[in-house]
Image (cartoon, rainbow, N blue to C red):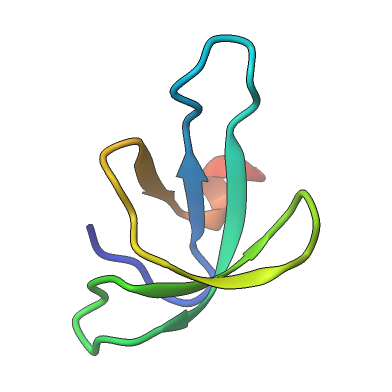
Length: 66
């Protein structure tokens, strides 16, 4: 997975009926865009260092908000 500041992280819920999480990438530790990422989560505006798992993917801003 590769991301850059301004991309969105989408984490699909492993449970039926639970919403997915969406967060804005506000920091990238590695020059090549590899994890971890500093993410500001939309549901509560909190920021965290995020190590993505298999349920996560990166979306460009124009893909989520055309």
